[in-house]
Structure formats: C-alpha cells, structure tokens
Image (cartoon, rainbow, N blue to C red; front, side, top):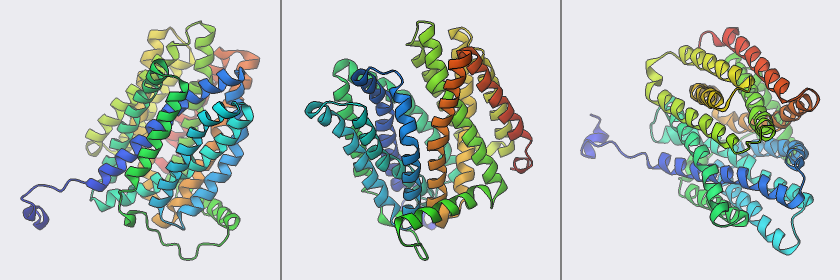
Length: 413
C-alpha cells in the first residue's frame, strides 16, 4: 500500500477528472448520434430530395477539411480544454438554429449547407480537442492508457446503440424539432461538464508556433502528415488501416445497406443490422478492456482482422436478414479490439506537442475520404447494382486485411 493510500484509509482515490471527461464525451457523442438520425430525416422532409444528404456531405467535405486543419493548428497553440468547451457551445447553436430558421424563413438546402458548416466549426475542432485531452486526463489520474481506451470504446459503442433509439423516441413522442432541441441541450451539457475539468489538463507549450491562421494551418498540415506518415512506420500503417475501415464501413452503412433494404421493401431492417453491429462493438470493446493485458497486441490485432474479414465477406453477399445480423454482430465484436488498438497507437506514439496538428490532420483527412468513398460506391451501385457494389467493398476489405496482416511494420507490435 502506498503512502497516499494509507493517508486515505487504504482506498484508492476516485479518478474524478477522468469520470467528468468521460461523461462530457458521452453527452457530446450522444448529441451527435441523435443528430445523425434526425437531421437527414428533416433534410429529406424539407427538400423532398433523396440525394440531398449525400450532396450535402460532398459540398461540405472540403470546407470541413480546412476547419479540421485550422482546429488542429489551434490546439497546439491554445488551451485544449477551452477549445472543447467553445466547440460544444457552437455545435449546440448550429443545431438550435435549425428549428429557429425553419419557423422564421423555412429550411431549404442552402440553410442546411450554412448551418452544416457552422456545425463543422464546432464538431470537428471539438472532436480533435477531446482526443488531444485524453492522454493528459488519463495521466493526471494515473490510469493505464491502453485499458482506458477499451473503456471509452465500450462507452462509445453503448452510445451508438442508445442514440438512434433516443432519436426515434423523441420523434415518436414529440417531433423532429423536439429532437433538435434535445440534441442542442446535450451539446450544452457536454460543454458545462468540460468546464469543470482543471485548466491544467489542456495547457500546451505553444513556443515557436507560427503566427496567422493560414500559416498555422499550413504548418499544422505539414507537421501532421510528417508525424502520421513519415516518422513512425507503425503509426503510418495504423492510420492507413483506420482510413480503410472508415471508407469500407462507411460505404456499407451509408449506402449499400440502405439501398439494399429499400429495394427489398424492408427499410426498418437497416436499424436492426446497425444495432447488431453496435452491440457487437460493445461486447468486443468490453472483452478487450477486461483481457487486454493477457494477450499480446499482435494476437489481438490478427484475431480482430480475421473476424472483421469474415464478417465483411458475409455481408458482401447480402444474405438473408438472420445471417446479415450474425455477420454484423461478428464484425462489431472483431472491430472493438482493433479500434482500441488503433487509438492506442495514435495516443502512445504521437508526441504531446504535436498531438493537435496530427489528430487534426487525421480528422481532416477522414472528412474527405469518407464522402469520397461513399460517392465512388454510389457510382458502382448506380452502374452495376447494389449486389456488385457490396461484393466490391468486400473485395477491397479482404485486400486491406491481407496487407494489414503481413505488412512488415505491424509484425512486431
């Protein structure tokens, strides 16, 4: 027993800072999860255009990338806790303005673009700020980073199950406008909880930072690319694998499965499949959290890749619903440890003084590759059909799996 534990009667101090950080992240993620369900429904209801959501993502992709780069540069210059707080308030305002504009002028596609960009100003730097704060919070409370990432992955999985259900309940018992107000309230609550964190966890050494927003963004991009892809082979491979996961899974969830279930006349089944995937992700993350130290990281890595490959291969066949549910569950369970491992490599191998620029660059790239992948898949589906599109995604993922398993940089992890 340590002297600190003797002084407190042998009880370990509750990691209060970490708990508040986790609660804040859960509230923010829950708000985003509800918004991800509600806003596309409102967009479709107001515009009557089924392609409006995809068009909106493409229109906003490049501005969102710029915002991500500027936010990453900012996070290596100012207190990261403060950026997280301001970002959640801006995100809340962007959502709250939707019902206001709808009541005063009426929402159209242009307003969705404007308020979507305002939301990006809040969401993207806020997401990166939370990522950059995590190692400092864990270090302050003396927790194990690898195990804690498993906990956060589990919580994120739980929120992705609760969020859509909450959105459905809000719409069912109230209206889509009521759901928007609830989303804004969740973002405000996240900001208020973050406000209780010590300022010290967000302090950065800004010595030598370039002046001017554009100069800072250029320097952030250059430094972020250098850190992510040049300096460390393991980090480079983990980033490439993460982008592959996002592109393939995003195309499945955002295009192939919705089109498939629409064509089969059972659009509600999409929710069941996505819920099964989220439930599997929760189980996999909890298992990783409990058992992470007992197995080598390479073992976790290979088993996760193999399980994901089987799950994607089965989903690529677009089989009957019961088999799709089983494949989605397996995919989620296998992705849980892999996601936690990729997060661990990022936090463990990126120096603190470069964390804002590196993670800002990572998030900015994601904001471009995800909609581009969905658009490319939509072209294949439009020309060759949803079945060929699903098989093409499965083939891409199998190729990624082979590369990720045998690439030299990941053999000694």
